[in-house]
Length: 519
Image 1: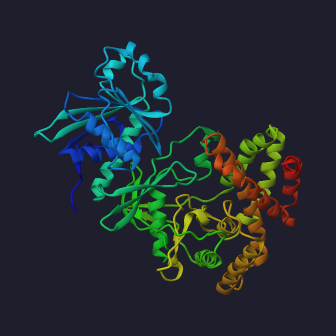
Image 2: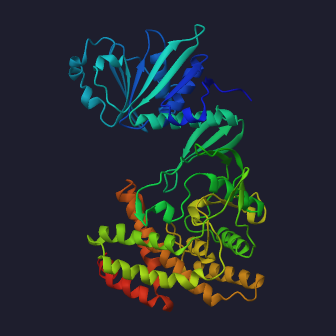
């Protein structure tokens, strides 16, 4: 395997976390193009990147390579803007404006170029940025190129200013991670991620593939109750340690979780096995694949499972999915969903009643034996690997928030998928399959108690998801999730029909019924 196309200066861990700079030695023009492609992946509309250095040092070469990388076309014609001053590229992933301001005498001439309009919602690359005057935008990426030790070599110094400091540090740490793992020269393709802030890329190198998982440590967030953040109360992973621990634990049990090829726990980069892209849902859920998914849960829920999992030389203890976690998730309905659909949030007395009703409903469920609750066990996080045998045919992708909780939670997560229509007949058949497997393994297993837990967990999960999907739309700018709300509302109504949830159903009818009828 060849070494990386360029060499980054190493830095101590503390420096890597804080220093908003990245120095790279470029051996030749190909190395310059490789760095440009790396930077191109990190840029987004509205970004400004300044290109500095003497005449002939390679600023235009870098800009051309970056444009071609964003276009995904190494042969794209990218003329120098030396004479036109501005060169605009309308690319599938957005507009890029490449400016060469060498011939300007100062910022007063920019207006004649239509500078203000040219850069709106575009990535802007500027050579000779001093012509913009002393007041450059505070958030920008700066590149300085210098001549190296021979005619082809260059030294690149990147600095992130303002909000770009953290973004550059992330880009630099990710590239260093791939270099250390031997995958720096891999081609990279973005993968549609989940609802979190994690980023995924599929890497290809020498006929092999792997997944790069970019999951920076989660900030604590503001306190929401008892001095604790939402993430702490809901028992959400704050770094990648749980993912590594649970992946290894699932594989040790014979399931198709990804192998961890390389990891950097501190920065949150993982290189993991590619479990493929074949889904368990086609036009509709594929029954045979859903059967494998329910069989895996039935098998997992009959195991005696460890409560400590190794991560390197340390041990990771999954948290308990306790009442406080379930209740703070339920509160999302009142914090986000109800204000959105009705324009108001329940008053403090109604909220306290809501929490008391939920605490009472959860008590019998949480008194039953617990298991590994993966928490995101549904179609977007499962792949089909037909070439494997047995339960390994199912690829399991998302489990970093695993907690010790009720077995029914993952069963209802799969069978009442918030993103796919699982018809009633298939849901009932799969539930019966699960119950039969549990009874076969343990004749004392009680289906009636499981049915109550299933309805309770289904109602709790639907309650949470209604709030999460509205939050994703309103706070995080992801409106696509709103299209799933009718499906989730139907699941909520079906679960609240269980006779043991009558008091809860009455609260929902009083506070949600009129709204839902109007919707």
